[in-house]
Image (cartoon, rainbow, N blue to C red; front, side, top):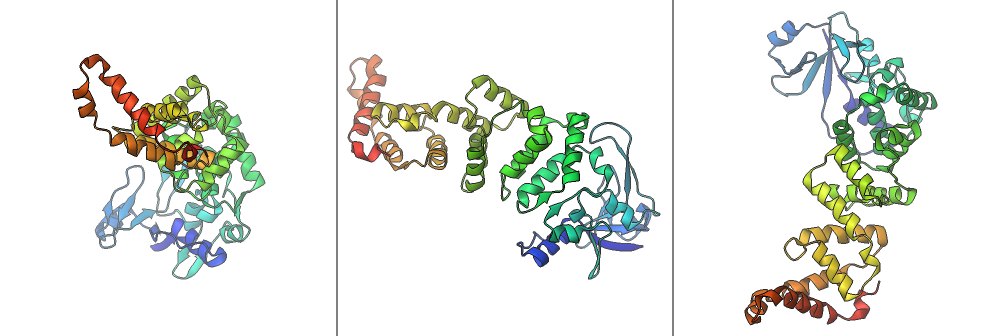
Length: 364
Protein backbone atom coordinates (compact mmCIF):
# COMPACT_ATOMS: atom_id res chain seq x y z
CA UNK A 1 0.00 0.00 0.00
CA UNK A 2 1.30 3.47 -0.96
CA UNK A 3 -0.28 6.83 -0.14
CA UNK A 4 0.26 10.01 -2.18
CA UNK A 5 -0.76 13.64 -1.80
CA UNK A 6 -2.65 14.73 -4.92
CA UNK A 7 -4.92 17.31 -6.46
CA UNK A 8 -5.32 21.00 -5.77
CA UNK A 9 -2.91 21.13 -2.85
CA UNK A 10 -0.04 19.94 -5.04
CA UNK A 11 -1.05 22.26 -7.89
CA UNK A 12 -1.28 25.28 -5.59
CA UNK A 13 2.04 24.41 -3.95
CA UNK A 14 3.84 24.61 -7.28
CA UNK A 15 1.90 27.67 -8.42
CA UNK A 16 3.32 29.35 -5.33
CA UNK A 17 6.85 27.99 -5.73
CA UNK A 18 7.17 28.59 -9.47
CA UNK A 19 5.01 31.67 -10.12
CA UNK A 20 4.56 33.31 -6.75
CA UNK A 21 0.84 32.73 -6.47
CA UNK A 22 -0.70 33.08 -2.99
CA UNK A 23 -0.78 29.86 -1.00
CA UNK A 24 -3.91 27.72 -1.33
CA UNK A 25 -6.41 27.01 1.42
CA UNK A 26 -4.41 24.03 2.68
CA UNK A 27 -7.07 21.34 2.10
CA UNK A 28 -5.29 18.10 1.28
CA UNK A 29 -6.50 15.07 -0.67
CA UNK A 30 -4.79 11.70 -0.78
CA UNK A 31 -4.88 8.74 -3.12
CA UNK A 32 -4.20 5.22 -1.86
CA UNK A 33 -2.64 2.67 -4.20
CA UNK A 34 -2.70 -1.08 -3.59
CA UNK A 35 -5.43 -1.15 -0.94
CA UNK A 36 -8.96 -2.51 -0.65
CA UNK A 37 -11.97 -0.97 1.11
CA UNK A 38 -11.75 -3.66 3.76
CA UNK A 39 -8.15 -2.73 4.58
CA UNK A 40 -9.10 0.94 4.91
CA UNK A 41 -11.96 0.13 7.27
CA UNK A 42 -9.71 -2.11 9.35
CA UNK A 43 -7.33 0.83 9.82
CA UNK A 44 -10.15 2.94 11.24
CA UNK A 45 -11.03 4.99 8.15
CA UNK A 46 -14.69 5.92 7.65
CA UNK A 47 -16.14 5.37 4.18
CA UNK A 48 -18.12 8.31 2.77
CA UNK A 49 -18.02 7.88 -1.02
CA UNK A 50 -21.11 6.51 -2.76
CA UNK A 51 -19.96 6.15 -6.38
CA UNK A 52 -16.44 5.00 -5.45
CA UNK A 53 -14.56 4.37 -2.20
CA UNK A 54 -13.55 7.58 -0.42
CA UNK A 55 -12.55 7.47 3.23
CA UNK A 56 -12.03 9.97 6.03
CA UNK A 57 -8.89 9.64 8.14
CA UNK A 58 -9.85 8.75 11.73
CA UNK A 59 -7.84 11.67 13.18
CA UNK A 60 -7.30 14.36 10.52
CA UNK A 61 -10.63 13.74 8.71
CA UNK A 62 -8.84 14.37 5.41
CA UNK A 63 -10.12 12.49 2.37
CA UNK A 64 -8.35 9.36 1.16
CA UNK A 65 -9.58 7.87 -2.11
CA UNK A 66 -8.63 4.51 -3.54
CA UNK A 67 -6.79 4.86 -6.85
CA UNK A 68 -9.28 4.37 -9.64
CA UNK A 69 -9.86 4.40 -13.35
CA UNK A 70 -13.11 5.27 -15.08
CA UNK A 71 -14.78 4.16 -18.29
CA UNK A 72 -17.47 5.96 -20.27
CA UNK A 73 -20.54 3.77 -20.78
CA UNK A 74 -23.33 6.34 -21.43
CA UNK A 75 -23.72 9.97 -22.57
CA UNK A 76 -23.42 12.84 -20.13
CA UNK A 77 -21.38 13.37 -17.00
CA UNK A 78 -22.96 10.54 -15.01
CA UNK A 79 -22.24 7.88 -17.61
CA UNK A 80 -19.11 6.37 -16.03
CA UNK A 81 -18.20 3.13 -14.31
CA UNK A 82 -15.24 3.01 -11.94
CA UNK A 83 -12.53 0.46 -11.25
CA UNK A 84 -10.95 0.71 -7.80
CA UNK A 85 -9.01 -2.53 -7.92
CA UNK A 86 -5.84 -2.68 -5.87
CA UNK A 87 -4.05 -3.21 -9.20
CA UNK A 88 -4.76 0.39 -10.33
CA UNK A 89 -1.50 2.36 -10.36
CA UNK A 90 -0.91 5.98 -9.41
CA UNK A 91 -0.24 6.84 -13.07
CA UNK A 92 -3.57 5.24 -14.02
CA UNK A 93 -5.36 7.35 -11.43
CA UNK A 94 -3.67 10.59 -12.49
CA UNK A 95 -4.42 9.92 -16.16
CA UNK A 96 -8.18 10.18 -15.58
CA UNK A 97 -7.85 13.75 -14.24
CA UNK A 98 -8.80 16.77 -16.29
CA UNK A 99 -5.73 19.00 -16.57
CA UNK A 100 -2.03 18.25 -16.32
CA UNK A 101 -1.62 20.79 -13.52
CA UNK A 102 -4.14 18.74 -11.52
CA UNK A 103 -2.43 15.43 -12.32
CA UNK A 104 0.62 15.71 -10.12
CA UNK A 105 1.32 13.86 -6.86
CA UNK A 106 3.76 14.08 -3.98
CA UNK A 107 5.44 11.11 -2.32
CA UNK A 108 6.89 12.89 0.68
CA UNK A 109 8.96 15.65 -0.95
CA UNK A 110 9.27 13.84 -4.29
CA UNK A 111 7.12 15.17 -7.14
CA UNK A 112 5.53 12.54 -9.38
CA UNK A 113 4.50 14.23 -12.62
CA UNK A 114 3.95 11.73 -15.45
CA UNK A 115 1.92 14.12 -17.64
CA UNK A 116 3.99 17.30 -17.56
CA UNK A 117 1.99 19.40 -15.12
CA UNK A 118 5.01 21.26 -13.78
CA UNK A 119 6.15 22.19 -17.30
CA UNK A 120 2.67 23.50 -18.01
CA UNK A 121 2.71 25.57 -14.82
CA UNK A 122 5.98 27.10 -15.90
CA UNK A 123 4.55 27.71 -19.39
CA UNK A 124 1.30 29.05 -17.86
CA UNK A 125 -0.74 26.61 -19.91
CA UNK A 126 -3.98 24.74 -19.26
CA UNK A 127 -3.78 21.42 -21.09
CA UNK A 128 -5.82 18.22 -20.94
CA UNK A 129 -4.21 15.04 -19.67
CA UNK A 130 -5.67 12.59 -22.17
CA UNK A 131 -8.40 12.03 -24.75
CA UNK A 132 -10.74 10.98 -21.96
CA UNK A 133 -11.10 14.68 -21.13
CA UNK A 134 -13.80 15.00 -23.79
CA UNK A 135 -15.95 12.31 -22.19
CA UNK A 136 -17.05 14.60 -19.35
CA UNK A 137 -18.83 17.85 -20.42
CA UNK A 138 -18.49 19.36 -16.93
CA UNK A 139 -14.80 19.73 -17.75
CA UNK A 140 -15.67 22.51 -20.21
CA UNK A 141 -16.99 24.50 -17.25
CA UNK A 142 -14.06 23.51 -15.05
CA UNK A 143 -11.37 24.60 -17.50
CA UNK A 144 -13.25 27.85 -18.12
CA UNK A 145 -13.37 28.46 -14.35
CA UNK A 146 -9.68 27.60 -14.03
CA UNK A 147 -8.94 30.22 -16.67
CA UNK A 148 -10.90 32.74 -14.58
CA UNK A 149 -8.92 31.67 -11.52
CA UNK A 150 -5.59 31.72 -13.40
CA UNK A 151 -6.09 34.48 -16.01
CA UNK A 152 -2.37 34.61 -16.87
CA UNK A 153 -2.70 31.08 -18.22
CA UNK A 154 -3.79 30.23 -21.75
CA UNK A 155 -5.63 27.14 -22.96
CA UNK A 156 -3.56 24.86 -25.16
CA UNK A 157 -4.70 24.95 -28.78
CA UNK A 158 -5.41 21.22 -28.96
CA UNK A 159 -7.39 21.43 -25.71
CA UNK A 160 -9.51 24.28 -27.11
CA UNK A 161 -10.18 22.19 -30.22
CA UNK A 162 -11.34 19.41 -27.92
CA UNK A 163 -13.76 21.79 -26.17
CA UNK A 164 -15.22 22.79 -29.53
CA UNK A 165 -15.58 19.15 -30.51
CA UNK A 166 -17.49 18.41 -27.30
CA UNK A 167 -19.95 21.19 -28.12
CA UNK A 168 -20.27 20.29 -31.80
CA UNK A 169 -20.83 16.56 -31.24
CA UNK A 170 -23.55 17.16 -28.64
CA UNK A 171 -21.64 15.86 -25.60
CA UNK A 172 -22.15 19.24 -23.92
CA UNK A 173 -25.93 19.03 -24.42
CA UNK A 174 -26.18 16.91 -21.30
CA UNK A 175 -25.11 19.83 -19.11
CA UNK A 176 -28.00 20.97 -16.94
CA UNK A 177 -28.77 24.57 -16.09
CA UNK A 178 -28.31 24.05 -12.36
CA UNK A 179 -24.71 22.88 -12.85
CA UNK A 180 -23.89 25.76 -15.18
CA UNK A 181 -25.40 28.24 -12.69
CA UNK A 182 -23.39 26.71 -9.85
CA UNK A 183 -20.17 27.17 -11.82
CA UNK A 184 -21.12 30.75 -12.70
CA UNK A 185 -21.62 31.56 -9.02
CA UNK A 186 -18.14 30.21 -8.29
CA UNK A 187 -16.66 32.09 -11.24
CA UNK A 188 -17.94 35.45 -10.00
CA UNK A 189 -15.60 35.05 -7.01
CA UNK A 190 -12.54 34.35 -9.18
CA UNK A 191 -9.79 36.76 -10.25
CA UNK A 192 -11.11 37.40 -13.75
CA UNK A 193 -14.70 36.16 -14.35
CA UNK A 194 -14.64 37.41 -17.93
CA UNK A 195 -12.31 34.55 -18.89
CA UNK A 196 -15.05 32.03 -18.09
CA UNK A 197 -17.42 33.67 -20.58
CA UNK A 198 -14.66 34.14 -23.17
CA UNK A 199 -13.80 30.42 -23.04
CA UNK A 200 -17.47 29.43 -23.39
CA UNK A 201 -17.73 31.82 -26.33
CA UNK A 202 -14.59 30.43 -27.95
CA UNK A 203 -15.80 26.82 -27.83
CA UNK A 204 -19.39 27.65 -28.82
CA UNK A 205 -21.06 26.71 -25.53
CA UNK A 206 -22.20 30.25 -24.68
CA UNK A 207 -24.32 30.61 -27.82
CA UNK A 208 -25.56 27.01 -27.53
CA UNK A 209 -26.61 27.33 -23.90
CA UNK A 210 -27.32 31.05 -23.50
CA UNK A 211 -28.98 31.63 -26.88
CA UNK A 212 -26.72 34.55 -27.81
CA UNK A 213 -27.42 36.41 -24.58
CA UNK A 214 -25.32 39.57 -25.11
CA UNK A 215 -22.34 40.45 -22.95
CA UNK A 216 -20.10 43.10 -24.51
CA UNK A 217 -16.41 43.59 -23.81
CA UNK A 218 -16.94 46.72 -21.72
CA UNK A 219 -19.30 44.84 -19.42
CA UNK A 220 -16.80 41.99 -19.08
CA UNK A 221 -14.10 44.48 -18.10
CA UNK A 222 -16.42 45.97 -15.49
CA UNK A 223 -17.20 42.49 -14.19
CA UNK A 224 -13.49 41.88 -13.63
CA UNK A 225 -13.06 45.19 -11.81
CA UNK A 226 -16.22 45.03 -9.68
CA UNK A 227 -14.73 43.21 -6.69
CA UNK A 228 -16.91 45.20 -4.29
CA UNK A 229 -20.22 44.03 -5.78
CA UNK A 230 -22.05 41.16 -4.12
CA UNK A 231 -23.23 38.06 -5.95
CA UNK A 232 -26.68 39.40 -6.88
CA UNK A 233 -25.21 42.68 -8.10
CA UNK A 234 -22.68 40.86 -10.27
CA UNK A 235 -25.44 38.86 -11.94
CA UNK A 236 -27.30 42.12 -12.63
CA UNK A 237 -24.10 43.52 -14.15
CA UNK A 238 -23.72 40.38 -16.26
CA UNK A 239 -27.22 40.94 -17.70
CA UNK A 240 -26.78 44.69 -18.18
CA UNK A 241 -26.53 44.51 -21.98
CA UNK A 242 -29.83 42.64 -22.40
CA UNK A 243 -32.70 45.09 -22.95
CA UNK A 244 -35.30 42.57 -24.12
CA UNK A 245 -37.59 41.64 -21.26
CA UNK A 246 -38.50 38.28 -22.79
CA UNK A 247 -34.82 37.30 -23.13
CA UNK A 248 -34.08 38.40 -19.60
CA UNK A 249 -37.01 36.34 -18.35
CA UNK A 250 -35.82 33.33 -20.35
CA UNK A 251 -32.33 33.68 -18.88
CA UNK A 252 -33.68 33.68 -15.33
CA UNK A 253 -36.19 30.91 -16.02
CA UNK A 254 -33.37 28.74 -17.34
CA UNK A 255 -31.13 29.08 -14.30
CA UNK A 256 -33.75 29.64 -11.59
CA UNK A 257 -31.51 31.71 -9.29
CA UNK A 258 -32.52 32.60 -5.76
CA UNK A 259 -35.02 35.37 -5.03
CA UNK A 260 -32.37 37.99 -4.27
CA UNK A 261 -30.59 37.52 -7.60
CA UNK A 262 -33.87 37.47 -9.54
CA UNK A 263 -35.13 40.63 -7.83
CA UNK A 264 -31.83 42.46 -8.34
CA UNK A 265 -31.63 41.56 -12.04
CA UNK A 266 -35.22 42.60 -12.76
CA UNK A 267 -34.94 45.78 -10.70
CA UNK A 268 -31.74 46.84 -12.47
CA UNK A 269 -33.44 46.30 -15.84
CA UNK A 270 -36.19 48.68 -14.71
CA UNK A 271 -34.08 51.49 -13.26
CA UNK A 272 -30.79 51.50 -15.19
CA UNK A 273 -32.06 54.25 -17.48
CA UNK A 274 -33.03 56.54 -14.60
CA UNK A 275 -29.51 57.60 -13.65
CA UNK A 276 -29.16 59.85 -16.68
CA UNK A 277 -31.88 62.21 -15.40
CA UNK A 278 -31.45 64.01 -12.08
CA UNK A 279 -34.75 65.86 -12.11
CA UNK A 280 -36.41 65.51 -8.65
CA UNK A 281 -39.33 63.67 -10.24
CA UNK A 282 -36.99 61.05 -11.64
CA UNK A 283 -35.06 60.79 -8.40
CA UNK A 284 -38.29 60.13 -6.53
CA UNK A 285 -39.45 57.67 -9.19
CA UNK A 286 -36.24 55.66 -8.76
CA UNK A 287 -36.65 55.59 -4.99
CA UNK A 288 -40.30 54.53 -5.34
CA UNK A 289 -39.50 51.84 -7.89
CA UNK A 290 -36.99 50.38 -5.43
CA UNK A 291 -39.51 50.67 -2.58
CA UNK A 292 -36.50 52.14 -0.85
CA UNK A 293 -38.26 53.72 2.13
CA UNK A 294 -39.31 50.25 3.29
CA UNK A 295 -36.44 48.32 1.70
CA UNK A 296 -33.39 50.62 1.49
CA UNK A 297 -31.09 47.71 0.62
CA UNK A 298 -32.70 47.52 -2.84
CA UNK A 299 -31.72 51.10 -3.66
CA UNK A 300 -28.29 50.47 -2.21
CA UNK A 301 -27.72 47.66 -4.74
CA UNK A 302 -28.84 49.86 -7.62
CA UNK A 303 -26.50 52.63 -6.51
CA UNK A 304 -23.60 50.17 -6.31
CA UNK A 305 -24.29 49.15 -9.90
CA UNK A 306 -24.64 52.75 -11.08
CA UNK A 307 -21.28 53.61 -9.51
CA UNK A 308 -19.59 50.72 -11.33
CA UNK A 309 -21.33 50.96 -14.72
CA UNK A 310 -21.98 54.70 -15.10
CA UNK A 311 -19.35 56.09 -12.72
CA UNK A 312 -22.13 58.05 -10.99
CA UNK A 313 -21.68 59.97 -7.76
CA UNK A 314 -24.57 58.42 -5.87
CA UNK A 315 -24.41 60.58 -2.74
CA UNK A 316 -27.33 62.79 -3.91
CA UNK A 317 -29.64 59.75 -4.21
CA UNK A 318 -28.60 58.61 -0.77
CA UNK A 319 -29.28 62.08 0.60
CA UNK A 320 -32.67 62.15 -1.10
CA UNK A 321 -33.62 58.87 0.58
CA UNK A 322 -32.42 60.16 3.94
CA UNK A 323 -34.56 63.28 3.54
CA UNK A 324 -37.77 61.51 2.60
CA UNK A 325 -37.25 58.77 5.19
CA UNK A 326 -37.29 61.48 7.88
CA UNK A 327 -40.75 62.68 6.83
CA UNK A 328 -43.46 62.06 9.44
CA UNK A 329 -46.01 60.26 7.28
CA UNK A 330 -48.35 59.68 10.23
CA UNK A 331 -48.51 63.42 10.87
CA UNK A 332 -49.32 64.09 7.21
CA UNK A 333 -52.02 61.42 7.25
CA UNK A 334 -53.58 62.92 10.37
CA UNK A 335 -53.69 66.35 8.73
CA UNK A 336 -55.64 65.12 5.70
CA UNK A 337 -59.36 65.63 6.05
CA UNK A 338 -60.00 63.38 3.08
CA UNK A 339 -58.14 60.10 3.49
CA UNK A 340 -58.15 59.63 -0.28
CA UNK A 341 -55.51 62.36 -0.54
CA UNK A 342 -53.06 60.86 1.99
CA UNK A 343 -50.96 59.12 -0.67
CA UNK A 344 -50.69 62.23 -2.83
CA UNK A 345 -49.88 64.40 0.19
CA UNK A 346 -47.04 62.09 1.28
CA UNK A 347 -45.67 61.94 -2.24
CA UNK A 348 -45.73 65.73 -2.56
CA UNK A 349 -43.91 66.07 0.76
CA UNK A 350 -41.25 63.66 -0.49
CA UNK A 351 -40.89 65.56 -3.76
CA UNK A 352 -40.56 68.85 -1.91
CA UNK A 353 -37.87 67.37 0.31
CA UNK A 354 -35.88 66.29 -2.73
CA UNK A 355 -36.34 69.67 -4.42
CA UNK A 356 -34.82 71.33 -1.37
CA UNK A 357 -31.55 69.55 -2.10
CA UNK A 358 -29.31 71.75 -4.20
CA UNK A 359 -29.88 70.97 -7.88
CA UNK A 360 -26.13 71.15 -8.40
CA UNK A 361 -25.67 68.22 -6.03
CA UNK A 362 -27.72 66.04 -8.36
CA UNK A 363 -25.64 66.82 -11.42
CA UNK A 364 -23.00 64.16 -12.10
